[in-house]
Image (cartoon, rainbow, N blue to C red; front, top):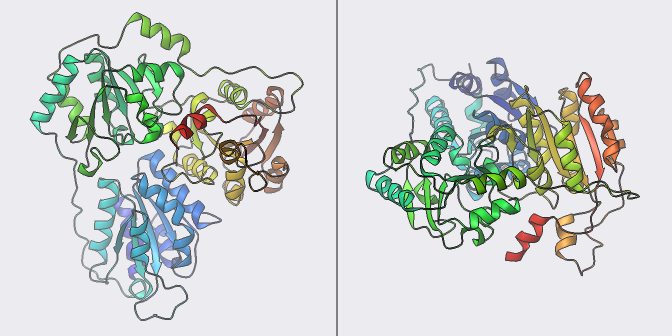
Length: 537
């Protein structure tokens, strides 16, 4: 057994969920070792797609995912996906082959530790055959327990060496801290004194739905999420949906009228708070398991260091029962205006309104779905109109704000939850950036829906720079449906809701290939979220 064999077998034993990658000479053996040990593997067409698929798989499944890469250029090709994962605290393990220490003249030689650290990932390595098992266990533990993206460098000479037969060390588990009792008492007192409390839950709270709902029910808080935690409170009577640029008008009004806002595992970025406008004069509390996150985006009146679920449980033991923000009037508003409204088709138009398109798709597609959204002017429409069953039903790779990740995100989510219909929503610019992975979706037989909001350009730019020369950001209309058919997809051009008839037929069929909808959407103005976002620029 070589060290490469040992690494693959040990990661399988530790419990990695799925591996993705593009195989070259440097990662050939370790990838096959993963496969031989029973880890499912999906071959991507580009390392960037592989990294994003692994990121989406980890987010959707809750398991550690692996992306395996060739040394040097394999790592740099994957760097945008790794940066997104690192900024999102995704438990992603990057197995990066590395040139041997003596190969100073190799074309593939770069400072891979520095590359990893530059995008916020943790740089680790397998140092020697004697330390290999401990190195792998340490890297895996950092991924799983601290929700970090780790680049584990595998030097070629170490990979090829015989493995040390000594048993692997036991994995130690890092656990989030229990909150300080004084902070718990202070938060309970603030909730007791609040008349209009609102909870905003982020990705760090996705494991704590039951605990947060119990506390909110006791103190009368309304429930909202950041975009990346969308769906966490799906079905709850007092859920406001997303806080921030994607908010419904009624949600934005109710959040901005709160007298106490408690952020649970949410970083309170400018997107979640609309540059602070949604917070108004409310007292602001932030609960997080990482000290550096407290107050990092906005000043807070109280920062509580602790696991979100444990903190909510502790606070619930001290709060008095109160109606808080919950009233018949608020309930009536949420019942009637809790969703975004959509216009009907415009007679005679050859393009479809993106709101109309999204609302129609929401009614056609099965409720058990996973929605993956790329970046762009369009992205508020699928986020706002396509309902999801829970937090695992929404995968939003947006921490780095890169376009081009949406299709690969959808693939990773589809593999993580094959029991649900994966829906990848992309703009035409982002879709064409990542189009190589359409072949991957076809090859894997993924019955997913790809919706392209096609405005024939980079919509965010031509709306933001409305009075400028648009020669660099507008493009001739492209028949994306024809391209998709060439890859082996079912496909249709959509200019009205009538063109969505293909969806019902596809849903009734074998679903053994993707369905691509090239939706020619109107582009006569910025989306509501984009107009809101650019107020702060």
